[in-house]
Length: 248
Image 1: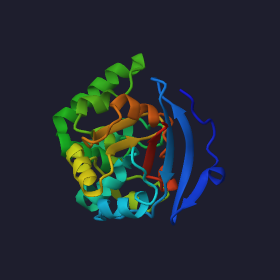
Image 2: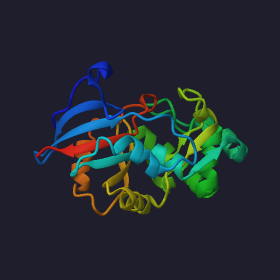
Image 3: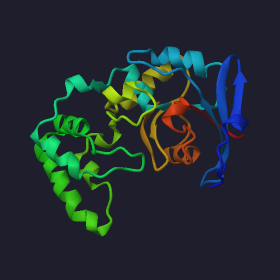
């Protein structure tokens, strides 16, 4: 697939109808179809804000029929209050022990944090976490990665936050948990706005599609192709909304 090799924000920056966005360039999918992608900049979204209002404020001025909106999972978590604060999580014996042996992923964040590990224990139960730890330890010498998250299940890999490296102080004290009803949220938002919506938890290694509205004409494979180079960028760019525009 054709991917723009560099990301110069000054060159990509555009402004239209009072909305700042970044032109991430054109990409070609595996089926030969091409897509333009526009990363829309927002304010720092706080807990409890309206996802409909965000779309109307930032996306509506740029939207054209045929576009699909990739809605960032972290922002959706904030909107629907799918969050936990440090005050709500009390690391116990196992969390304080096991985090010392946890790996750190490519972003510098993994289960290498007692609060985050305790949150996982609270979500899936200690027996499953212990099983995941054992399975991870047994498979690690063979270079198999991600076993801990696969065994835990329940979207544990989507938990974000509780880390001090974030540019935003709020994320030092807050963790976000991907909503289980992602498809329903996409459907509801699309019905309210008339814009096809896909909920995406994306980073530089993978694009986890959590759900999409029924009026999204692109297939799952095409959505993955359109987002292959993570046009959302990193969190400090404040570009959680990506307008995917198929080239006609």
